[in-house]
Image (cartoon, rainbow, N blue to C red):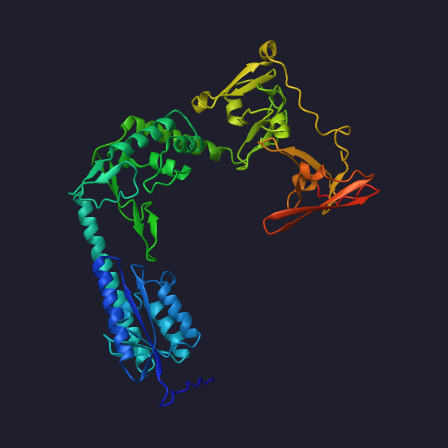
Amino acid sequence: MGIQVIKSKKSNEKLRVAAYCRVSSDTDEQESSLENQIDYYTKLIKNNPLYEFAGIYTDQGISGYVERRPGFKQMMEDARQGKIDLIITKSITRFARNTDTVLKASRELKKLGIGIFFELQNMNTLKEDGEFLLTVYAAFAQGERDTYKELADMTYRRRFEECKPFYNIKNVLGFDMDGKQNIIVNKEEAKNVKQIFTWVKQNYSTVEIVKKCKEAGITNTMGKPVTRVFIIKTIRNVQYKGDYIMQSTYTDDKKISRRNNGVVPSYYIKNNHPAIVSRKLWEDAKRCVDERSSELHKRLVVKPMTTTNYPYKNMIYCAECGGKMKAVKKKSGLEYSYTCQNRRKYGSDFCNNRAVPQKVIESWGTIDEPVYVSFDKEKPIDKQYKFVRGSTWRKGHIEKVPPEDYTREKCFYYRRIFCDKCGSMLRKTTDTGGNVHFRCGGHVDFGNEYCKGIYVPKEKLDNLPQVDGYYLIKEEKKGEEKRYSYTCKEERPIRKERPDRK
């Protein structure tokens, strides 16, 4: 049996006393209450000759759960560090609203020899009957809280059943509240909302709409740029067609707001307030969003890029430069897109054509001969891509000749530069701005697990001394600056063993 000895204070040693204050909302009235509590406990502690002031810890307008109270957290941490001997608080409900929280905190403090004095209950947790009384009072406090919550929920439900909603439109673009708490249309913002619905109906993607909103200066209610999530939520919000859903969300036992999927009753009011868009436009736009979402889920698994799976594989060409377009799997992994190889290799200065989504190519039907694809960003997304057959394109166009800036004649280090980490040859790449870099081929093919790779600007390599043999390039990062060094070998470097391609 283990016995813990709690050392008593010497008669001439003062108790280090702190106070904990909390209010459950951030209204002006509660702010005044908090100030009064701070002033009261400061005087109470400082005016007692047996006490040494150890601070006031406060939380305001925050949930009663420990993990959401920074003041409570700091008080517990200071107690663990031996800075406090006694904590004074108004009542158990001010200390915590949850029985488990009260008991857990009080037991931890008791083990440290720290007591909690609850003024309203006139109880000190260090006394013999403190644990029992605390359990009883805390249970009553939680029961009282649950009763108040049930009464509040009942009040809300009665108002909902009588079609008297509590409006929450603070972050809804296009609406305001008048002096009588009625929803009214904000005409300036409503224009932007209508425009977003129109773009969606015209089949623009959410990515394109975000760009268009930025160009048009359309922001959310906080003045921040709109996002793809904002667009989707806007289109699915029934308030824009004049309806309102009461209790579309609910608060669970942990005071976390969640979407109501039938957990509690919800109430739908039709024609509740002035609409911003017609019901037809709302339905059309929502259908477009839902169809896009459904289409993405259908493409969860893509087939290997072969002529058997995709007969048009080698028949897609760029209408701007005449180069072949290569299939590249998108980051989402849901589909392929065809990108001009000349653009990838020589940059946007040589070719400024856009990548073509797989679904766009498939929408053209059977492709049995080479086609040349062009892009026009000014048109709606379903009309942005246009193709002509190869015989037609060649009548009015000549294929661009790529610049030969990386040949044995023009670059003395042609095919003689290698990664110092894995021994792979560095490959030439060009970004969208036309800047030339050389990247580790092992990293490109097999990723970070094989080699973290290096990324060297061409101008750095142009400064290499012209020597016979092979260059091993090393990249080091000091702060934000990258530095490059090299070593030379007479024999070609042996590259690290490569994994099998999947």
